[in-house]
Structure formats: structure tokens, C-alpha cells
Length: 403
Image (cartoon, rainbow, N blue to C red):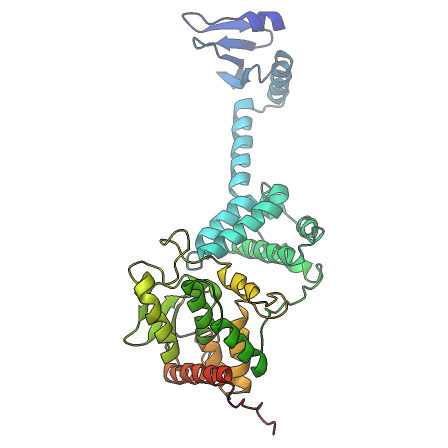
């Protein structure tokens, strides 16, 4: 029988050699100095060798236990080598069908036509809150209580909205698994109502003409950089998402046609913004400053990058506005939606199209960037003119139906 001392003292030689233990177990010492445990046996009159691991990761005592387990399999007419292959294949299949593996496969398809930022946020959320506990498990073996435990852990961190979003993404992965034959059903459907409902938090926005007039005059008096000042003045005129305005590219703007065409970050669809005379002039005023580059609103430290995502809100704060309670960069959208409908009597359907929201028509067709373009062009000019009147202190149109 081998001893631990003999195993430790075994040195490499010119040729590989064996140090025998008993019952078929031996240490195979390679010329490189590696020490490998092997077990020789016969099955159906055929000589075979089973690898039991390497030393010192597998100790002498561990190697003997593995040998004894193999001998028990032989006593039950089981080939240890074939059994090991089957276990390895099963483990490989389980890893390929794990929640994490299926999620990444789903993401590669699902986010193909969606914004990269949405992709990154979703996967990062799952990496932080779901994968550490459920990621390695075969997706077909995960049940509703396990998922609930994971999302409840997020809720306890006072991140209720994140918990809902993680559960929603997990459900999408399970539906994909059902479609591809890796799961029989989506257990997330059993968790409806398991999390408290989130409180819808609307972006701070002004919807009263008097407040809007004061804001517009404050913007005109802003003493920051010309870049930020121009972006501020354009925000209420075009009411696009803040990320889309700050990353506006000259290649997408046609000042002859007074049009701005770009890909919507949230839906990855093309969108068209008719530019009012006021908006077109602001873009034209920016051209001498940044027209030689890619972005209309260049970063202060690196002109090859767009303006900071925090620039508009920071400017509003400098002007004395509370971006949690008064107005935020995103709030210009809510402001336009409310006033266009309530004060200018614009059809909400036309407004939603200009906001680049997906609003199916009577035939079920999704958003079309050129639909109602004539009405939208007229609306954008009327909107700009109305803002000018507000700023100048001219008449304020009453609410519909209000004398």
C-alpha cells in the first residue's frame, strides 16, 4: 500500500512510471512531475482505466474512496467509465440549460432591435439579483417559491421597482425557455400580486401656462454655456427624450427641410421631428460652434462625445428649480402633451405620434414615423408660437369647455 510520504516524495523521471496502491489503484507520475490517480479494472472481459483526479487536489484517502465507489459500481454491473461520462454529459446539459445560459441566449435574440442601454441594464439587473442564487440551476427545475425568494430579497433592499423589473425579465426568459423546449411553463405567472404594487412616479413637469411662461423667461436668462443654453431652449420646442436631444447628430438634421430624423432609443424605431422656425433657428445658431463634429451638443471636456446626461437638470437646478418637484429634463414631454391637448385642442393621437409612442391604429399597425406628418408639422409650429406668446406675456388660452 502507498503512504502519503511515498506520494509526496515521488519525483519525475525520464519516463512515466506507476506507484501501485491496492485493488487496482495507482499513482501515475508523468515526466512533467504531474501526479495522476488511476484505477485499472475489467468490465465485460475488457481492460479499462478510470481517471480519479490529480494529486494533491485529490488526496490518497480521497483516491481510495473514489476507487471503492467504482468497485461498488462494478459489483452492480455498472461500468464506472461510462457512468462518469453520463454524469458529465448530464452536468453539461444542465449548464447549457441553466437559467443564466438561457437568459443570455434569449437576450441575444430579444435585444437585437432594441437599445444597447436597455440590454445592458436588464442583464446587469439579473446578474446582480437573480444569477447569484438561481443562475446555475437548470431552468426546468426552478419553481415559483425560489423566484419569489430572489425578488423578495431585492424588495428588502428598498428597491421595489427593481424587483418588479427583475421578475418581469425572468418571466420573459421562462417564456423563451418554453418556446425552445427547455421548460414546460413560466412559474412567474404564479407570482402575480406577490410583490406590492409600485407607486407610479411621474416626471416633475409644469402644466400651468403661468408657470411655463416663467420657466421660459428663466431659460432665456440662463447664463451657462451656449451649448447648454441652446439645448435648454430646444427642450420645450421639440419635447424629445432628453437622451435623444443631447445625442442629436448633425447627420440627422436637415435644416433645408426643417426636419430631424433619428432612431428612438427606447423603441429602436425611426422618428421624425418637424422643426418649427424657432427650433430650426436654434439648430442653425449651433452649427458654427459644433457643425464640424458629429454631435450638435458637444461635451465640455471632449467634443467627440455628446453633452453630459446631467447637463439639463443641472442647469434647471442652477436656475432655482427643484428637479424632483418642479420640472425635470424629461418633464418637457409631459408639459407638451398636457398643454397641446388641453389648451391647443390637438388630437391626443397626433400628440402621441409626435412623442414617438407606440400607438396602434384601428388596423393594429404600429407607430409610423410619417403618419399625420402634415398635422404634426402644423402642430409643432403652433406649439412654438404659443410658447413665444406665453413668454411675452400675451393671452393664455383657457381650458377646453371653460369660459
